[in-house]
Length: 96
Image (cartoon, rainbow, N blue to C red; front, side):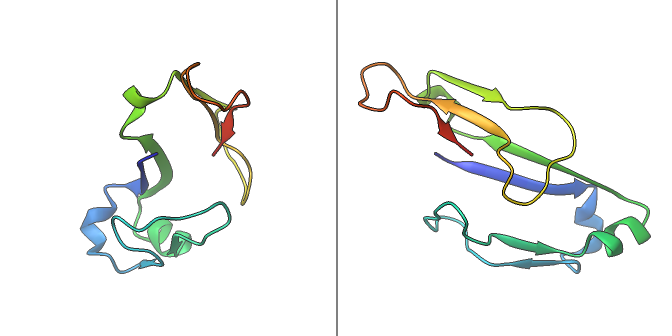
């Protein structure tokens, strides 16, 4: 699964200051790996939103991707269920 996580809206104007990447593009990660550190207070202080988007960029390779619930989530909460095509061995949804 290819996942794009975009923290904040219009945060590009901050030139990366409130962010520390913990992985690089193309790295393989596992559940529980720390991906990014973001100073949400600095983003808010700049008058920007901390809304975070999670996008599956290769969604066409999956049968269905369903949000668990809209709104605020906390660390380690599931945000979506990902269902593989029937031909694959997995019968349970993957949680992201």
